[in-house]
Amino acid sequence: MRILSEQGQPLVAQLIHDSGIELFRSAITNYLLKEKRPLLLVNLAEDLQPLCIHLRRSYLEEQARLRSQPTDVSALKDQELRQLSLELQQVGEQFRQHLEMLINQVIASNGNPEFEAEFEQLQRRMVQQLDGLIAGFSVSAVHQRAQASHRRNSVVPLLGILAEAFYYLANGLEDTLVEAAQELVQQFFQQVRDMIPQQDYYRQLFRMLGNDGGIEAMLDRVAAHTRLALVSAAQTECDRYVRECPEFFEEETASIFQLRETLQQACRGYDYQNMVQAEPAIRQLLRMDFEQKVSRTVLQNFRQVINQTLNVHLLPAVRHQVEVIQEQYDQARQYLAAIVQKEAEEKLRENQRQLEVLRENMHLFNAAVTEVNVYLVEMGCDRHQLPLLDEEKSDRLTATVM
Image 1 (tube, rainbow, N blue to C red):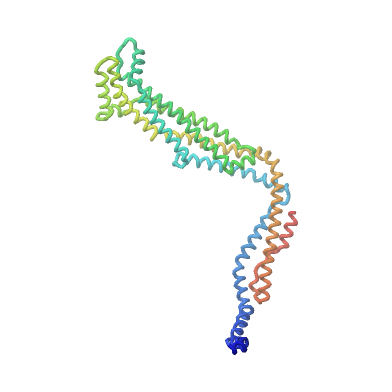
Image 2: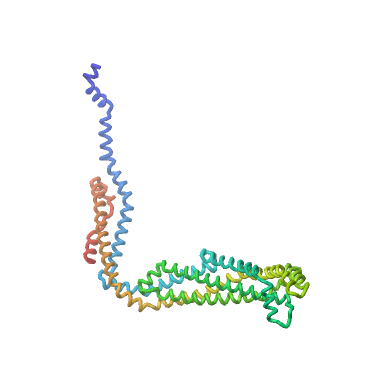
């Protein structure tokens, strides 16, 4: 303890000196600051070189872009008006592509869930209507009407009852198919009307014309024509229900057996009661015939009719509307003349703001690069200097525009 208290600090100093740690510290400091530092700076410069080149190119490209812009309101206004014809063509083409895509989703795929749901609703309504009509069919009421039409006779044939039933079912199904087809057309065109205003081309049309270029009116006309065409198609489809299916009388089929059984039940006597007693058999016979007809309509025939009707009425109208939009150049030029002045002034101010930002960024870039280059020169690494930007050109450009 006495030795340590008397010789502690000198002893520790001697131990440190004998260990060589101070020499190592001085040597490593000299190595890192004098010998290794240039290499570290060179490595840094090599890492920064691609980044500086990319930034420099970006700044120069932005400088060139701004330099190419008109520098006064009149020039900007003329530039906007010169592009008007091309913009009208682009808007018309975008409108055509959008509508063709919507039509294609309906007629070539199941890509329109709303339309598919509406058509499935049509299918269900037809099936439910057939069930309801058959359940509500009254042999008694038909028998009275048939006998009232032929007062000389008191006997009504089964075929007369069936004929009235065929008209009753066909007309009832026609009412449902017509109504469902009209609702489907209304839903589809409403969907189109809702989607179009969300598109960029629609907003551009309003900017150039102050209106939609006649798109809404065109859709109204096509919707009306399509509705009439589908109503006619539904009436034709259901009018054919009055005629029996060819399979109705084929041998060895369920329908012919059902017809024979119905005849046996209805024709056991000649009075009203025998016919009424055969009502369940008559309903079953009607179901066997009309289920085939309704099935062919909702599963095979009518969807193709809808698809073709939309295709025939909407596609030509869309293509014609594109021509109408492109022909409105004079109206667009006259309308834009009032607002382009304001837009040109705003664009000129925006260009000036961008030039100020560009000049500031170029200055910051040069300051950072210069600082690195100073160290490289001090270390004797002149060949690795980073590229600078010519700020004088930027200043001259800003002064010219402003």
